[in-house]
Amino acid sequence: MEPLFLLVLAGLTSLGAYLVGTHWLGLSRRDLRIAVGKMLECAGMTLLFFIINLGGGVIAILAVRTLTGTFLTLYLLNDVALLGLSLLQALALEWWRGFSAPRHGRRSVHVCSPREGTRRR
Amino acid sequence: MSWTTISRALGGAGYALFFAAAFTPLPNLLAGWLVSPARLEQADAIVVLSAGIEPDGMLSDASLRRTVHGITLARQGLAPLLVLSGSGRDGGPTEAAVRAALAHDLGLPRERILTETGAHTTREEAARLSMALRPRGIRRILLVTGALHTARARLVFERAGFTVFPAPVEDWSHWVAYPEGRLELMRGILAEVFGTVYYRAAGYL
Image 1 (cartoon, rainbow over the protein chains, first blue to last red):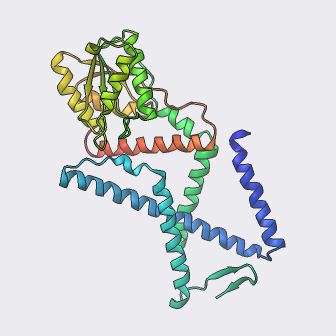
Image 2 (cartoon, chains in turn cyan, orange):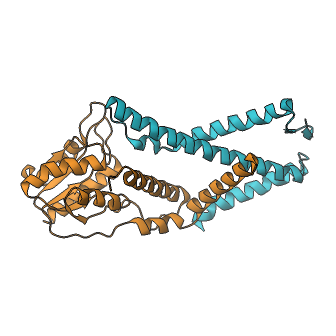
Image 3 (cartoon, rainbow over the protein chains, first blue to last red):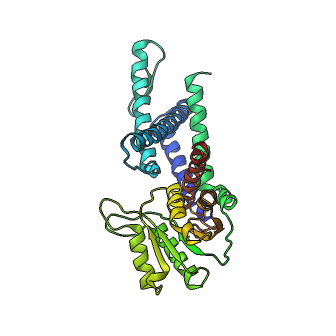
């Protein structure tokens, strides 16, 4: 039970958020599916940035070692902060794509507003 | 396949890996497969690989565990010589020197302690120790390093000409069950897998 405590906790608070969202904030269940899809896209972008950062880091470290003779450890990349940075990059890119899309006429963007509910623009 | 589909698939895979790593025994099972069993036999030397030191001279947890394990094996009489590896950082004391001081404080005579301070990677440790130890006739070594690191380190040292008896440090618990611990374990596993792939690609194994 103890290993699953956090999972159960997050499950309960997620259920609470769902109930608050649908009953008090007037959020649409259909838009929840769209939001989960966007969440997966963001997670995928985070993973992609993480892989690019890792690959770039390896190349940079090996280049520094080879070209300057200075030793840099590859374990510099073994840091959870890299995942956090990748997440920030992914969030920035996803929001940028989202806000840029209507001007290029590719697709509409759902904007969540607490007072208006979900509106399409 | 659209970019949206690809990124959602990647995201789904990422979340699946996160949940599997944090909330299932998957990391424990993987670690169990990767860990080499200990083979404690009489040897010419006990070689303790480096694991990091802070610039103020504080050994990392992993380094301290390895050092204590090596000292324990030396005090059990499994080898006449204890070889401690480890360089320094940012002008601070070397890991090998701090370890040697600890070994002496715990009762090991200085003449049984040898230090190696110039290596930065496992491969460099194997190469430099091969140059230092083989002229002394030292061939059989008890290799002390982290449990997950042992398999790769053993191959590197065997390639350097040593007969290696693994003496891994139990630096993770088979029973780690809380999510943060399992994620740390998975991170260690992935780092070691990456290291092995890199060493194979570079021709070091």
